[in-house]
Every structure is written in structure tokens, then in C-alpha cells.
Image (tube, rainbow, N blue to C red; front, side, top):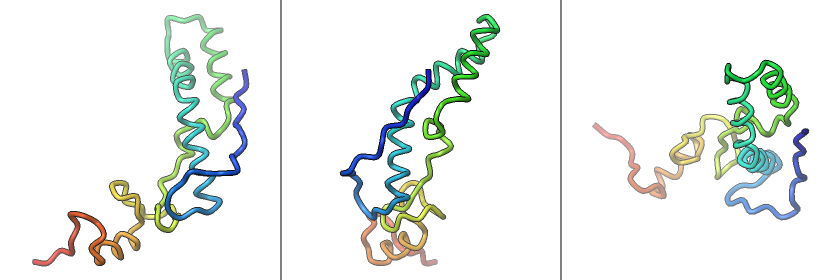
Length: 116
């Protein structure tokens, strides 16, 4: 059983900055969410020592042949304002430069410049 990744739709429902990398990352997230239960079942079968060796090897081969987008390591945190993937704060989904600009402008609730 091979996993086929569907094509990227023409209309994408993504808020914020959009470029090809953001669209690709969104697609990776959708594919990962769809195939995660199947991957968990295969990982369980591989690790279960009470199963026959043939079943475990078959599950291991299916995992190895699955599409790369079904893996969690393919997902990258991206800034919603600029689309960059470096130095992104997870809580705000912003990179450090955009975080600084929005914090100084007072656009982030509960965030203010430190002074002591």
C-alpha cells in the first residue's frame, strides 16, 4: 500500500504572508494530519515484539516507503507575517524581527519592552 500525496489546491485558505514555501508547509501539515493515525499504527506494529517478525518487517517497509510529507520532521514553524522559518517564537508564530516591531507598536497583548 503506497501513500499518494494529493496535489496542492488552486485556492488556499492561509492567513498572513503567502509564498510558495508557506503553501508547501501548509500542504505538509495537512498531509501529516491525514496520515498520522496510520503511521502510529505502523510504528506500533514495528515496536510490538509479540507480533511475528514477518508482520513487523512488512510494517517497517511500509513506513520506509511512505511519502516524506507524512513525517513530522518535514513540518517547519514559519512566521505568519513574513513567511521566514528562522528564529520563530512558537507562542506568537512570529520571527524575532516581526515580534520586536509588533511589540513596540503595541500590537501584541501582554507584551511590553522590559525596563529595570
